[in-house]
Image 1 (cartoon, rainbow, N blue to C red):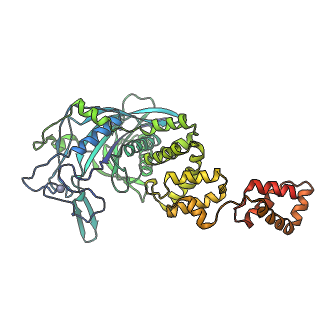
Image 2 (image 1 turned 90 degrees about the horizontal axis):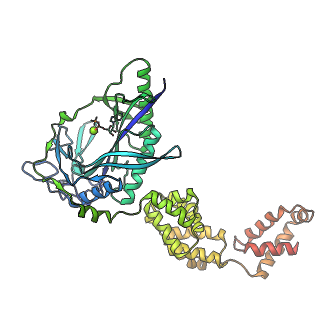
Length: 472
Ligand code: ADP
Ligand code: MG
Ligand code: ZN
């Protein structure tokens, strides 16, 4: 039998506000345990939540970018359950009237573009964090009340690869919006993966399981692959898939059953009595939509058209908004899009990777990169020397002209000076010279290389070539 997976993802994204959803506590990552708490987020009796307006605006901005309809009227609901990381014993979330609904995200799948539906986007608060040690369990409430949006996809994804593409597309968009850093290791993006299998082209869906506890996109993909083959295996043996929540075990590369699926009624949802409903008028939505930047896919297409870049360059350069901004600032100063792309894609990105830093932290200013290219154009330095200079620029942030001066890296264009070195090289490499004369023109490269070596790469290659030929 031929089976087909059906996948829907529930993605929780932490919104990058300075303070929490319902209190003024900070949201700084990595602060000492319980240092960012107050009576509100610790759920003391009698406290009242106050909604953070910036959270609502970032959530609306996200929903707009995900092509959702913003509900003019939404409200918060209490989701009741007891767990030590939830001091109030309920989570303030949204249930029957979420902030936004009916959106989509584009992914590319097997060379084709697919629109993956988004059922809803809603706001909710995060819970605390339990730390289990041999001596017992500890709880850190810093994360309690951190603002999240939950983005629920429709069950439209048909392979683990599509799920992976979807997560990346989502991350790219949200990072462009600067609503979240979407860092999975720090928990600012979490994904629960719902998956079922069915006979290919069947009408209905099979029973799904929900897999949690993956800490990278790659792990989501692996967990889905594992779960898909586990379910197919069950069906092949004539057994049933149990509807349950399962945990991904990174070490063992498998999922384990955790609990049978909880239903909405288990949570006794009811409208949050301490908060007024959210009424969002079109003017407000309109105003927020003005904050919408050009999104990754649009920007990439523009890079292709406007700068005539190859698709790979455009993809890499628009992979982050800051990198794309950096690139465009360079192009604005020096209208050689492909030359700039080459320097950024090879030299600069390699240096960033080596140091593990982001483009925003780079010391090389666009104007300095451009003046380095100007030095090459004017023949002051060779392209080869420039590759050393860019490393110095990266380390020091200095103006390239200054580096050239300090290190005496000016290109040698004086023919007499080059001529002297060539004479030496000819004397020292008689054999190669003879070979050249007997028709082995390939050795020219070797001889040029010797001259460059003696001049520490500073001789102008055109002059070296010309004089060598003349002299031999
Ligand atoms: P639940 O009530 O179990 O939370 P929802 O209807 O809220 O289920 O959907 C949760 C997620 O599960 C959504 O992303 C949805 O696309 C996905 N989903 C729903 N049914 C299936 C199914 N049969 N197979 C795979 N995914 C599914
Ligand atoms: Mg659900
Ligand atoms: Zn607080």
